[in-house]
Image (cartoon, rainbow, N blue to C red; front, side, top):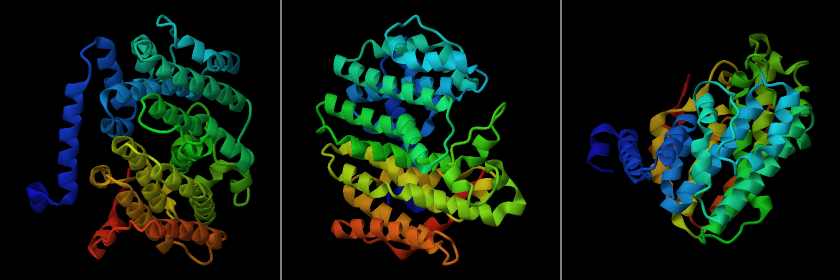
Length: 389
């Protein structure tokens, strides 16, 4: 711990270090107007992604920035419930062609997302400056994602298989695309699509679970991603989970959603353990550690149905600063899965399966031989790491 940490504590020190790193990144952004817009917009539409992208070198960082914004624009079209289906579907299906036309424009979304769409020509200008290997990877993933999104515009998430398929289209493909970008940069071997897919599915399922209330209250139309195969065991309608009289059923349903997502963690560990470049590892590992921490926070937590449940910024900063090797990843996965395990009650209908999946994570981490020893006070500190927004 440094001087700042000694005076203010480890979380304050982590926040200071994070701000210094963010300032350094701003100084490294290319001076061109389109790149300035791209990085500014990245920070506005995804602060967490803007933080982890700092880990990458300039060339790959530019490609990943553009990749994210192109997919965020595609997602903005999908998310805008005011766009008629007959207009939305063709745009999603043809989006991969539009990215080669810097004059293409389609206004939709709200707030920062509307700004992204209205000034999308800046992102397209940046895209056209990327190397051909990067462009081809971005085009291919945009094509596959747009087709998948179009499919689910007219289809609800009924079964767990539907849930996996939807998450593949909107997030698993992101993992596959990032693996292609790492390979195009000459930094990594091309990872198996199954492992890359699991990296995306785990992050997406955490977000879908955590964001239940925000999605169900979406105006003018609810966004419903929890699979009927799971929630119909507990309530007649998905929106019923948010009502206080259904709290016990809601928490059981929530716990089953978390248990479903945990199945991807071993693939994620296998993917990350094969990475060779430390910057790429940090970029990939930080979101995965935060995702497992979020699951540990959400599990058995009725507040998921009352407001936005999230970690403190200081803890987020600590995770970013302290995730520097696979040893750190294994240690964090072991600790957060242990915290989740503490919250499992025997009367939960999925308790046995949840414990089985948590124990599998812990065993993988232990068998790596890379676990670090932490002070018990550190682990106890993580038990009060959140707030309800």
